[in-house]
Image (cartoon, rainbow, N blue to C red; front, side):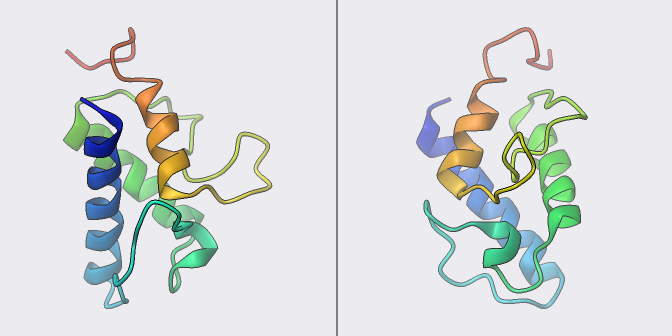
Length: 97
């Protein structure tokens, strides 16, 4: 799986959450920061999206990892940065078999 496929899945997942909540999902792209950058998308939505991405990508993202927020918890990450974080778990021992 390449980065673009992960980016596409992140965009799709974030859009699904936004639409299911009756919120706009227009214009989500590589530089979009879902947490704080999209209407009412908060860190809890980030956790929900992480679970959905873990299942749809078949990857085990550790419970202590929220790929939507920087490791120090001070900055919301862009879709591209989220994909980079998730990609570190693909092909590793974290991969769900």
